[in-house]
Image (cartoon, rainbow, N blue to C red; front, side, top):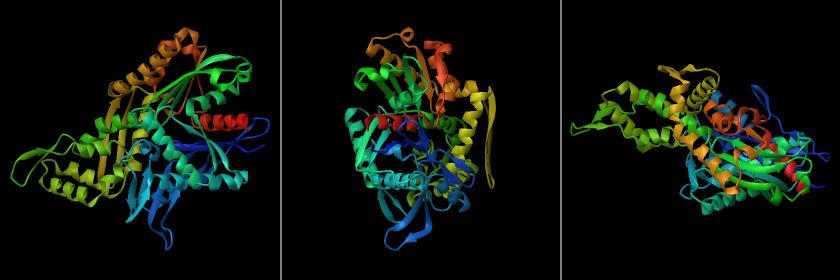
Amino acid sequence: MRRALGLDLGTTNSALALAGAERDVTLAHFEHRGGVTDTFRSILYFHPDARDARRGITSVAGPTAIDEYLEADGTGRLIQSLKTYLSDPGFEATSVFGRNYTLTDLLSFLVRALCGLAEKQMGALGPRIVVGRPVHFSGGKGDDDDAFAEGRLRKAIAAAGFEDIVFEYEPVAAAYYYESRLDHDELVLIADFGGGTSDFSLIRVGPSARKSPQSERILGNDGVGLAGDALDAKILHNVVSPYLGLGSSYRSMLGKELPVPVWIYGKLRRWHHLSFLKSKRTTELLREIQDQSLEPEKIRGLVHIIDQDLGYHLYRAIEKTKVALSKDDRTTFLFEDESLRIEHALTRADFESWIDEETGAMSECVDRLLARVGLSAKDVDRVFMTGGTSFVPAVRRIFDSRFGAEKIEAGGEMISVASGLALRAHDLS
């Protein structure tokens, strides 16, 4: 029997699992200075001094990348949310300290690092792997974009050493994880929320259902290219950006009063684009704006975040705020670094008003899926919610209001997809 290996290569976090002969699942674990985790942060870090004469600048990935980045006080280049670029043909490569790396290169670095650590625990992984993919990739506009994204992902995983690559929808994988706990049959709606996409599947699960071909069990799939990162961006735009000059003005060389360019904050709100602001052209523009700004301390704060590559720290503060608002009705956003301090009180009601467009898109997607397969909410036995964004109350209400709170289950938020992919690999062996 070939090794039953499943890889959840996520926008924010990744995980790898192996299913044994009896369908028992083992997750790879990753050590770092904060302890041991069964998720692998989808981050690459390039230190400017870590050079190899033949290969150029070398990278580290996952929890270790964060450790080294923090130890280096923000020097170097931190790259994250790589999966978000897969459907974008305009993003082919990026320069890191003068050397170009393609998106495929960067993703393969990430997969190699993850699998290399897993092999130390599990032994040789073998040439075959089942890999999760969203129903619709973030940023994609149709089937052609999804096919393009999957092709690039396949190329990256092949470059990491795998010869036999099978893709499975992430919500279908989560259904395999959910099913492993059942002793009866159900029609379940899987709601899987990642960093970049929200995916939904209607699938029959359970002991009897497993005897049917997968094509007969899956009634339908759908998804939208937004999730946790999009919700984070709303906090950044509404809370953080005004403290960094959004909406402020400066005087041009001719004395005309002009608004600070909004496109800068568009980059800032997409944290995987933040490092792209650290270019010579943008830095020079911001310093010119700072010199002529009507509120120079705000632009100074923006320049400080870009110069010191503080995107990771900033978004950790945003994530902490989002988590707090999932538990409490109000909280205070706080970000501090040297002389820069941003403190702002906000309520859950504020946050929910900002993300109304995103939750509306999720709601429409669920309704569209039900309508396409000709079912109503009452036909669904259970809703299984997984992924970090499933904790957000406004997201949870989408399902409570349609299906009833008594039908909602949750669990395995960070490992359900990887575990299910391994189970799928077992069934394909």
